[in-house]
Amino acid sequence: MGAAMRRIHVGNALSAFGLGFTVPYLYVYVAQVRGLGAMTAGVVLAVFAVAALIVLPFAGRAIVRRGPLPVLLTALVTAAVGALSLGLAGSGPAVLSAAALLGAGQAVMQPALATMIVDCSTAETRSRAFATQFFLQNLGLGVGGLIGGHLVDTTRVSSFTLLFAIEAAMFLLLVVVMATVRLPHSPRIADAPAASSAKGSWKQLLGNRAMVQLSVLGFVLFFACYGQFESGLSAYGVEAAGISTSALGTALAANTLMIVVAQFAVLRFVERRRRSRVIAGVGLIWAVAWAAAGYAGLGHGSQEMATAAFVSTYALFGLGEAMLSPTVAPLVADLAPEGMAGQYNSAFALVKQLALAVGPAVGGPLGASLPAPYVVTFLLFSLGISVLAVRLGKRLTDVQDRPWLAARSRVVARGGTTAESVSA
Image (cartoon, rainbow, N blue to C red; front, side, top):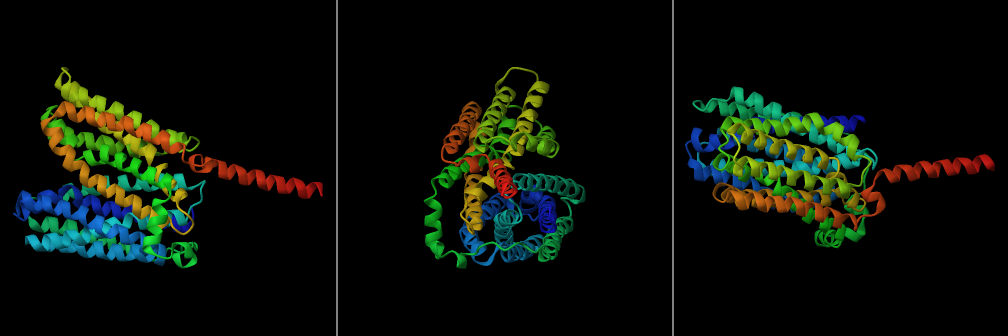
């Protein structure tokens, strides 16, 4: 790992640590502590998604034209202002405005950091780099949430102001760290006349059939898993399975613990396997997870068995996430033409945000009121992931599906050159 990559990973950890302070408590802060009600709190959460959907189409273009680092620094300052404003806001309009700034900044960070990882890695090291990023993000979120939970007090507004101030400080600290990063040169849009307009770059992306299929697959992945964590699945657990709030917290902890413990062991397993087969395997694992959720809520075992099954659902989701982190993001990068990684990363982040916006809206009411159809629906979605992954594999080149072949071919080529020079 070079110095630039080390700083990028430190940045990922710091941003996740800062987010962990506030994300779990945002609803409580707006609805109860500020006394603005459940409706305003729900609108604030929606504003995060809407802000992301608005800025991401422009973020990709900016990353391609200006490079990921200036875009990242702008996003960090925007997010810091939004976080601090949210901690000080006392009225509905002020809270919504601050949430829009924070949501926009957070959304742009993702593709900017991903593009920096692409610029600082090779095809052989990219999977490990993205796995490390995912590991540090989850570790940072978990540690930040744990510390934030001990600092927060719902009877004191000042305790929440402190949390948002710490989040803003983390973003500003990240500005300092990232300002020292020296990225290797990568082509910008000025170097690529074929993609000289925003319309042209999007047309070029949509003309990449493999990327379009990966985007569809990504939507289903995020809709069927991430979009259900804090909405449909938790509603289903409480209403159908009788899971207590403490058990729900245990399930969320099991998800994070599985990722932190298994990430690098899983990486060794997936590094030499076809990416499309790995994603297909994730679909099967998640189908088993939904079957366990079905047993928890629809079976006739004891409450202890139902709780154990529900916790195992979240743990199995974590195992699948650990398999996806070194697989999907590097594949997005490998599908991008030279100099277009920022555009492709932003497009995939946009797909993710759409899934995270639609997922809770569909899953929440369904999980609470129709538990059996809810489980069956998302079990079928998980099996659909496997089908879509196999179909995607037919669109990928050998090197895109099996990136280690690129390293092997270079070794063979160097060996051949050496042999020729010796014989000469």
